[in-house]
Structures are given as structure tokens and as C-alpha cells.
Amino acid sequence: MSRALSFSFSPGLGSLFVITGILMATTATARSNPPASAQVGAAYEADFAVTGSPKSASSYAITGLPPGLIVVGATFSAATNTYSLNRPFGIITGSPTAAGNFSLSVTAWEFANQSGLSRTYAYSIAVSPAPVVAPLITMQPVAQTVAAGSPMVFSVAASGAPPPALQWQKDGVNIPGATGNEYSIANCSSVDAGAYSVVATNAAGFARSMSVLLAVIIPPSNAIITIEVEP
Image (cartoon, rainbow, N blue to C red; front, side):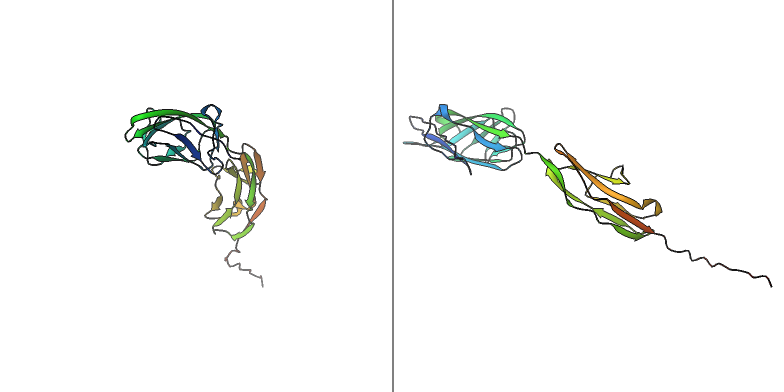
């Protein structure tokens, strides 16, 4: 859905417009501007400019951007959370890292280095939380049979939002420190044989992988057995 955004200004400077994939500038007053929509973790981009006759803006100061967004090519002051830009237009881009309603202040000057006529416009960006999706096991571990003393690697993949935490288990008991997409044993022995699985957990729930067996083969002894028969 398109969002209306426009500011009238005179003398010298004209209207501010912001355009993204869903945000289009149309005629509106400053008091009726709906906020732009963004989402935590999702890419966001908006162009802005103040144009008009006889003079368009040549420099800007933008404050109040949501964390994770920047103004391309601008100088940033962390003390005031302000981006200063010497260009006739600018681009806001990035991926927001926090949800909430953020009030921006955009001041436009007719000359470079924030000089000449100026006007400040209010604008807002509503950042919604990232979607929460329950974990799903997208690649199951595969059962293995190895000889004693050989290495072994189980692999798994899981999706979800936020990315789920993984915990490998042997015979239903958590394996300490085994929290990656792979679980390996460098030198298998008989005590390693058993049923292995993974539990993927995030804020939306959990998912358990298939339980697969690790079989460890003990090779026969090379000892020579001598049988003596009494005459």
C-alpha cells in the first residue's frame, strides 16, 4: 500500500518526499503524514529530498533514525544522533534492529554546509518486531556405522525466527557443549554407540530431529589362541 508524504514550504524550499518500495510521495499536509513501515531485521530504503522554486535544498540534518538505519554519505554525530548531509537528496538505508515508533526531524537548508534558508520537517517510521517462526528441522542427521578408532560427524540444519538454538542429545540426554550444526567424535569407541538427536529451540517453540543410531564396530582381536591336547 502506498503512503502519502509531502510538506509544503516557502519561500525558496519546496516539498519533502520519501520513496521506498511501498512508500510513495503524494500531495498531503504535514499534519496528516502516516508513518513509514519497517520491520526489525528487514532491509529498508527511502529516498528524501526537499525541492521547489526558486531553490531546492542543498544540505540536511536528520535526527532520530531507528538504530540500524543510516544516511548514505552523511557525517554522523553519535552525541546528537544526527546525520549531516551535503547533497540535494539523500538515501536512508539499512535494517532496523529495534522495534517502536521513531520520530525523525529533517532540517533542510538551501545552501551547502547547513547555511541559508532552512525548514524542519517531522516524519516518523514505525518499526514492527521481527516475525517469530517456530523451529523446523530442514536437514535430518543420518545414521552411521564406524569402526572403533574412526572419526564420525553428524550434521543437522534447522530454520526459524529468531534462529533456533541447537542442542545435541545422546540417548535423550544433553551432550555438554554440543550446540552447533555438527557433532563430531574424533575417535569412536564402544561407549559412543547409541541414539543421537537434536533439539532446536526459539521463542516460538521447539522441534526435535529424528533419532539416529551410531553403531561402533569392534574389530576382532589378532591374538593367537593355542589349544594343547593331552596325548
